[in-house]
Image 1: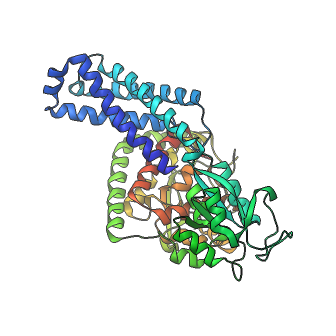
Image 2: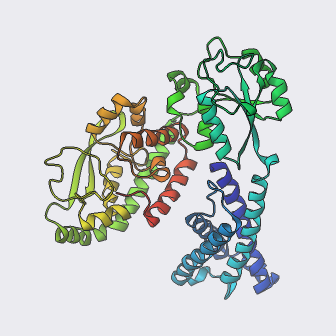
Image 3: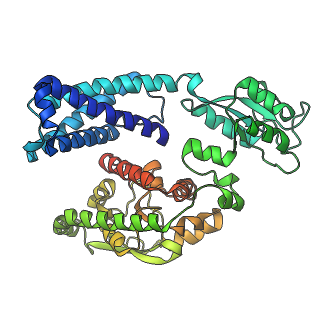
Length: 463
């Protein structure tokens, strides 16, 4: 998903620049346009144009390739993105008329870019839907783990194609030496791992995913090594799961996997950069929102009796506790008779105004103070209540590992999964949290930041 989005965004930026330049040349003539290129305002206009059309495309899910999107959906998304771009750019041009290249250029440039964008995206999806451009996957194993990997490959048709399975035993018994019963379609088993290289070559597999429930005594080391030396990529099930779904496969991860896998690197420079961005964003956010605090306070007071702010103990970095600050959205003493309980859909404890605040994320704004003070980061795993942390640590493996970095105002789990209110939800969100900790980078933080804007605007996941 991230790789696909990166390719689309890069080429869209090039096409947006080309559309603006082409339109300016046609509208103004080459001599006048070339003279404007020496003006800083022209370059600033180009940057603003490209940034806003890409942002609008992101908001309208033009880059969402996670589903089997059809051409008609592409057209609709691009049209909505064009309208959004026109609205945003019109506001910019109204506030600063100096950045306009000329009358009529904006509409013509957007129409030109929309045409370029549709042709490029349709061509890209046509290529992704062609099997020859997919990575062909051979799964080593025939048990439950292999079946799960096979279903992931089958559901991710734009990136991978399942060519079949290879068993790890001779003969055709119901179960093999690896302890795996046949839980995959027998007609998709291409043969035994003793001929793994020949099977992979005949199937033209580019990736072999090792999905054996038990490797000791049955792992075909020599055959897998031969495939590796012949240029075939070898991946274990957790690594492929991470690549395909952008989350971690907790059930099959061992402490050794954490130790020897790539990722989980936090350099001093990265930590300092992240802290600097946290301070900058929290200061900007507070400067923008502080004038609205009195209005919000009055609205809360009129809606229900009780304090304006709600402070609650949460578990932070290295499981140190801190006080989280929010605007109050529940009635006063909401947990007096029940104790700590998860919020649920249509929670009766939430006030009418609080329901709006939660859906629009207005209640989260005071957490910018937590970010500024350093108890939270702008992006990271959401901080959980200590009462829930102790329960979840007892039943979910590796739950403590999510506390190795500062909790965040938003995070990968928040933009990829809806609000959690059960142990099963906590497990699913942990998959995403650990993926973020493993792959933490400025690029991923930027992606989460823009995804968060989309989530806030369209009210996804709030309770």
